[in-house]
Amino acid sequence: MSEAVTRRGGGGRLKKLRNRWSEQPKHSLLPDVSGKRSAAPSGEDDGHQGALKRFTVMWSSFRRGRKDKAKDAEPEAPLSSSAADNTSRQQRYASGQYFFEYLVVVSLKKTKDCKSYEPQISYQFPKRDGMAKFQKEEEEKTLKAITLFCFPEGINWAPLTEYHSETFSFVLTEIDGSRRNGYCRRLLPGGKGARPPEAYCIISSLACFGLFSKIFDEVEKRRQISMAMIYPFMQKLREASFPAPGHTVEIKSFIPESGTEIISLTRPLDSWLEHVNFATLFGCLTDREVLLVFAAAVLERRIVFIAEELGTLSQVLHAVAALLYPFTWQHTFISIVPEILIDVVMAPTPYLLGVQKRLLDQVTDQGDLLVVDLSEGKKKTFIVSIGDEDSILPPKLQAEILEELSSRQKASGVEELNRVVSQAFLHFFVKTVGHYASHIKYDRSGERGVFEKRSFYKAIESKTTRHFVKNFIQTQMFDLFIQEVEQQHPGPQQGIFHKKILEYQEKKKKDKPKKH
Image (cartoon, rainbow, N blue to C red; front, top):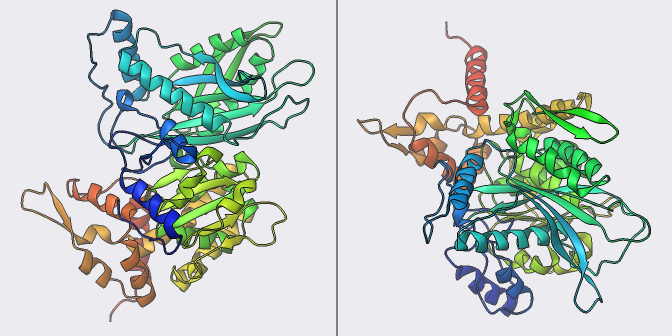
């Protein structure tokens, strides 16, 4: 993994942590950490570092690469008929047929000494019976990780009479880069008197926060009647096909005293933005502040976001990652860092982290990073910064982004807001690196292309843009993008990025003065 930013300072503790990160186990993966080699650090099983090791998740039975079709790991022993059926269901799920893989309810149960509470899974759908031993062990590790991210605070919970419901998300990432999304809603269960909150969590390979929020509304409604009412609804949902962008799927569900209801679940038309709501990001930061965060992210620096609310952290981190489209953040991504894993802030490699404000003191002793306060009534947005964030992007292009963003005030809804914001940053990439296809030379067979880096940035007329691009092409996100293009056959590219490139090129031709 290339390091866009290296750490300076930190003393012996940093050196020790850097050694830990350089000795990563080959087949273990830290929950909610993305990137090809973002594995959990090895080391003695003590304190926070031991917790990092204990909550490592292995996904070998569900492993699938970025381009490969889903494959199950080879079983250690012949599978029974029920296990074979289970494997078949996994294959169908991984191909995208199922909405979700798991629904679990995580409850806070008293510890053996009755002095505190710990999160435990009290309900799981579907139950996985007849699995091979290695599959069962991996599932147990996965479920343990889920409880950790549903209650990440690490505080001593107590029974409550009032609790503000909140919805947030996290990511479970395999060592090959494939991801599963965790959608979580925490609330106070029905009943009388003081009681601890509980969490519903859905694990799915599908990224669509708004749609799963609506599913939670239905689950919550049924939970207030009886836990048994959840099963038939989720079974119907599991049997339904995930709708195409802009389409709707209808689920019929029976509720006592209400009769049969039809629940409509609509997928947004812009499917690449369906996990994003930019409103939270721009509610916490000004346009210029968003631009500075984008500048740091595009050069793959270490960024920590601070907030009280879990929902704010998860929505802002996903929004920042979406600003990078058509490129993909390749490094550590933890939308909500559990307290037990807070030492991940010492990792020397790039990351996007969400940290609750009460843990701020454990973050601000770091250097060479950007710490962004999202809290209401904050005195200072950038608590820690490198200081050059406002000079990373070309000034002219910064002004153009800000001008496009100003039109978001007229947006009538979430989808229109997402379109305005995403296009502003997409146009930035079109203008800076949209000419990349002209600098990929293919061999005679046309099977393999080679990107000519020097001629690519030399072709840029603006000195400030050229300076930015020379830095940007060193990032892992650009490198992976180019690698994928090099492996494609020459010819017209597909997708919204390429559509915008063609539109920009046509506009330049029209605007170019004609020679007489």
